Length: 125
Length: 280
Image (cartoon, rainbow over all chains, first blue to last red):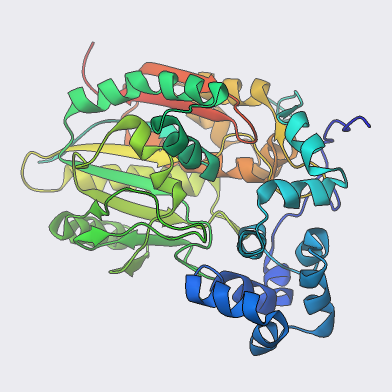
């Protein structure tokens, strides 16, 4: 499988430009995610994921996204990449897993494909 | 009065820090050894410049601030700035020292010149500073740091022109500080990269090199480029390059280019440019 060359689009699924309304939508996901920076919170989460997520008012849909490691779904749901990264870290994954999931290719293929080189200068320069 | 002696713009990324620690332990990835070697002249420049104060314009990545309260501009004024735990544990480096007397002077100047920043007496610093710092100096850190965090994680972010003006105001603050302190101004962010979406890992060396080639003498041209255009061709996180305009704005028009370097190890364009105020 060949990894496609990145396009120049700022629209999903190519890009997620993080905005205020996304922040509002993802408020619970982000508060839950960022709590996982504390080691003791990571321990509580791993011991009982459902109870921990309930504490942060995650909806059933959001909980299912976390359980499925559905990084693309969490981003689309308003989670910020830098926040989602903390969930991945707690679950033993990292940025590569998120990127590969977003691009719908296996992790090792994504690692091999990077840097995914493009060219071009901004219009008008 | 104090004076700006020069400064540099430099990329940052979590992997830059992680790969440094691995490298120093004896296993440098060849792609990162190139960056390590490329930063040696910056290390020499900084040692020779002997700054008494270092202003660093950077961005936090939800490691100190959260969206409960996310400042567009935040200045740290404290004796000490601890390293932030980003969720993977702390790296083996001491806290940064701060100089509150200098910090409050800069606060006064900036607010009186219409930059109404959030002042933080507790500010933990993430890879925005810690990832490149050990490449260019070693503990004990050579001078107190004044960290200025700019929102780059949620749009709207400040405009390129606003960041240039912020740099100009920082220059004014330094020039009005009593004494004869030598102050370096550093900015860090970008270059081309995107870390989410199907474009994950995109790399635009053509754009990054264009940016490095024009920052010294063509600031107007770079500032005029819409940020969306930069994100379109360089990745959504390439918008962090706007932070470099604060560094350039803090230096005089006659600051001269003394060094630049560029490489693309994995998922972030790694570049550096050093400008010096000393006459040739």
